[in-house]
Structure formats: C-alpha cells, structure tokens
Length: 309
Ligand code: GLN
Image 1 (spheres, rainbow, N blue to C red):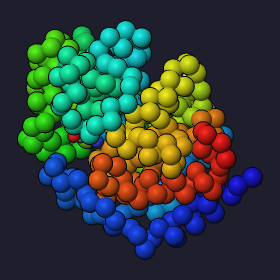
Image 2: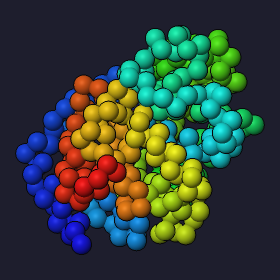
Image 3: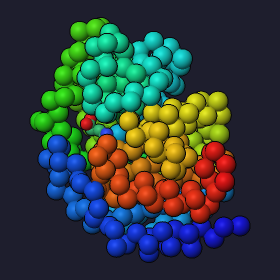
C-alpha cells in the first residue's frame, strides 16, 4: 500500500523551490492579480480518504475545469443528442482558436475548447433564464462537493465579461451558424459565471470523485451518472482536456484530466482516486506548469497511469 500522504509530502518538498514558475493568465484582468507563489494538491480516494498538501484549502478560479461539470449537466438533459452540437475529437489548437470553427461550419471540435463549452452551456440553458442556469450549475457543484460554501466570484465573471472579446467572436460565429439557441450575451453571461466558480483543491477533488468511482460519489452515496457516462467523460478529458497540450499530458501523466487558466488541473485515476492540483503559473499552452509536473510525479510514484505502471 502506497503511503499517499508521504508521496504528497515528498512532491510538495521537491517542488517548493520551483513554486512561482510559469506565467499567470493576464488576459482576464482579475486573474492577473493572483499571487503566482502558491501550490496545492489534493487526492481523494474512492474509499473516502482525503490527502492534501500546500495551499489545498485556498479557493481559486476553476475556469475551464467547470466545463466538465457543465458537460455532465448537458448530457443529463439531452443525452447523446448533444453530439449534434459539438464533436468529440481533439482539436490540436488553442482553447480559444477560431479558425477550425469556420472550417467545420460552427460545430466545435469538442466540449472542452471554448467554442464547444459555449455550445454546451447553451444546451443547459434550454427553458431557463440565464440566472437560473447559473443557479443550477452552482447547486450541482455544491451537491457534488457536498459543500455549500462553494461560490462564484462575481468580480472574475465581470472582469471576463468586459474583456472576453475572443469568446464573443466565437459565440457570434456559432450563432451565425445557428449552433446557439440563445442570445450571445446571455450564453456568455452564464459561461463567464461558470468559469468564475471558486473552489479549493480539496473541494474540486471531492466534486469530481464520481468520475473516479463509476459515476457515484462513495463519500455521499450520491449517484450522479451511469458508469458508462463516467467512462466516456473520462475518455473526453484524456483526449481533449488540455487543448493542444492533451497529447503531452497523456504522455507524461497518463490520466484523464482537465485544466483551467486559473492554474487548476483536475485529474482522475479511474477506480482509485480523484485529484486536484493548483499553481497559478501557466505554461505556453495555458495549462498549470507546476500542476502538470506534480501530477506527473504523483502518477509515476503511485503507478496510477491508465496506460500501466
Ligand atoms: N474563461 C476562460 C476563457 O474563456 C477559460 C479558458 C481556460 O480556462 N482555458 O478564456
């Protein structure tokens, strides 16, 4: 039996001299203010044990990691019909790229690039006012994490609303191709609020535990999705969760995962544990630099890679 706390402690110790590496996202002004000198890591095992090191109890902006939760809601609403609106292939381009969208007539490559996530949000909004859709997501994430203290940081949402020109371009493009049913400002209002969900590593690992445990959260007994759906969401995270860094993440870490420009990475060791790493400094493709290194060390030291130990 691996002593997980000892593994986490050793990773923390070895990485401490490197904390601060990478570049904090600055295209969202509110995120540019975050102190880069932070690092947290939490692991929650399917038998309900929680292991943490560093700043694992500091809330951060989960940004694109929220796309996993919105995707889960959308699949619950429309099931496989979702795949008429968005594809399931890796994009090989940046998270906010627009070129592919024109080639593919407004159908985004996958639900984790921005265009795809915006389409997924539009699906979840059906029959709801924007405020209600935000409320539904927040309730869902609180339920998953079994923690009512999870919040949305309105300053981050507002900051992105004022500067999210590329996302407005992507959304307008999709609306022109009739792949958005709601007005662009409504869809992006919801999208920016979902990205502004503020969570700690520990809350995030708890919230995603259902993906490691065949669709049910063993800590709460809540059944969230079927085992088949959990497996498929994990497959999408493995192939598309890190944009054009997805291949590299699979190569080095070997776990399904989803990154966000707030510096968080959520990852799943199927049947074993869910993991959340956070360090705000990003690498050149917009994924947490130290977060990825920490996950590589964790996977190597535990033998958790889905490709074998
Ligand atoms: N809110 C961010 C954006 O749309 C999310 C991007 C990310 O985390 N990669 O640009």
